[in-house]
Amino acid sequence: MKTYRYAERMSLVKPSAIRELLKLGADPDVISFGGGYPDPDLFPLEKLSLVFEQVIKEQGKSALQYTISEGLSELRLKLIERMKRVGVTCGLENLFLLQGSQQGLDLVAKMFLNKGDIVITENPTFLGALVAFNPYEPQYATVSMDEEGMDMDKLETVLKANPNAKFIYTVPTFHNPTGITMSLCRRKRLVELANAYDVIILEDDPYREIRYEGEQLPSIKSFDTEGRVIHLGSFSKILCPGLRLGWVVAEKELAEKLCLLKMAADTQNSTLNMYAVNRFMELYDIDEHITHIRKIYKDKKDLMLETLRVALPQSVKYTNPEGGLFTWLTFPEGVDTTRLMKERVLPEAKVAYVPGSTFFPVKEEVNHCRFNFSYMSKENIVRGVTAFGRILKEYC
Ligand SMILES: Cc1ncc(COP(=O)(O)O)c(C=O)c1O
Image (cartoon, rainbow, N blue to C red):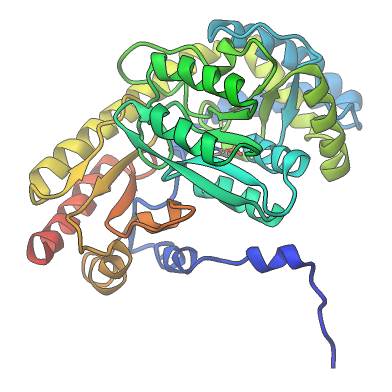
């Protein structure tokens, strides 16, 4: 008989019931608003094939070789330029490439967390971050949000109650799952509080460029005077997630330590992908591409919100995000969106979403759910939301 003697941390590594439920959403007959996938019709396939071909032909010997763990300097220099637009001045010693921003979540947790350490998050928060942090066995303290993002007075109370908290994790722009954006004055206050209570901020900002309306806001990192904000960015939503390319910006000492952890984890990102994205940015205007993405997603968001308005009972509220990929629905107390999906919406309407309970690290709230509007076609947005609304009108 064999016994797998797993490490204790594995007790927190398990598939959630909701993940299992979402697998049912993979049925081709189901209209799924569950995932956070970009629209694959927006991947610049022809341009990318040309770029990959050129890179292999002209630079193949370097592009298929190992390279430094920090990643291709030319691409990092381009990102350093782009970071200036959001108010961040940094150099090659501060910015290195990651396998998507998801890797940054893992590395930051690995760098800071001992078992039982406190991580402060928005409530609700990005599930993928909890999945990344959990193996390091933290405890969570949560801060509620309103339409301006994390409530700073509540954050101060949480900081007072948890003086040794290791870091505050935030998705400040078009938050996943709620779509809410943290206001300018709260961004500044967040850094002031972090300075006062000597805590790190982990700013996870993969959606910032997918803005449909309103003014672009400076990143939280731009207000960092003490080297305590770690910023994560990503090509997943502005180019394609399959390239697995993201980046981190951090104070030199932190960047060096994080990079040592990256080296241990995977040595480096794909050299070929880094060369290809660098060449893509030399040959084409990525901002033009992003403008196109924004237009398509704005149309889809407007269509989803208009269909929700018509199809849903008035008792159901939903956010109107200025960007990003999600709207967050809130049902009257007593509605359990997991049960609703399992018992009615999936079997009868053939529609899937992500039940909200999964996004709450401490105390689950069951009367919310997240709808994605980037992935489905416009036709399916109307069909799916309308079918969902029919069930709800009976149910609520
Ligand atoms: C808030 C947030 N952070 C990080 C990620 C991970 O993205 P990446 O593809 O860059 O690893 C996602 C993906 O959906 C996300 O929503």
